[in-house]
Image (cartoon, rainbow, N blue to C red; front, top):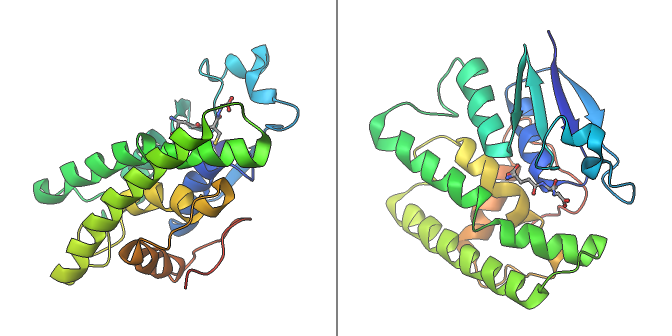
Length: 209
Ligand SMILES: N[C@@H](CCC(=O)N[C@@H](CS)C(=O)NCC(=O)O)C(=O)O
């Protein structure tokens, strides 16, 4: 049975999944959701698919998953025979999980700022931007330490699903009025990620000087 992704092209969370599907060369059926202005994800029909009323959702061989981070784990676990995108080594595995939680947690402040600026979501934009900056500071400090150690990626010597999960809302931060001038290591990492083979950009992502 084919992989099916409930997707919205401007969603950074769906972009996480599209990125990994591309890196792993996986074919999939794209089911577009009228996120804006239709708000299809809030309908009863979609809530029967995801009671949280959120995208992305992925279906694969009878399994239905919500949450981009869970979906990344599933795809890497099932389809990445190299084991590089989700390393099982004990010194790496927990760190990948930790940064996945960060991507789905603290970094989502940058998603909130973007929803406010792009789609007019009614939320406290100053708090969202402040929290996004706090998350970027943490990621930039980590990537600075990694640079000093000679590392490029968030964990280990190969990009992992932690990089995939952290990339979209960092790269799209400008959409939420958040500049990355103060985060040089973070910008280096974004550039490295964008040079990965099979990297696919989405609307709103430009080169980082
Ligand atoms: N925990 C979920 C959150 C995904 C998420 O926030 N998706 C947004 C679109 S980018 C959404 O569906 N929001 C629901 C809404 O705005 O009503 C994940 O990481 O995948």
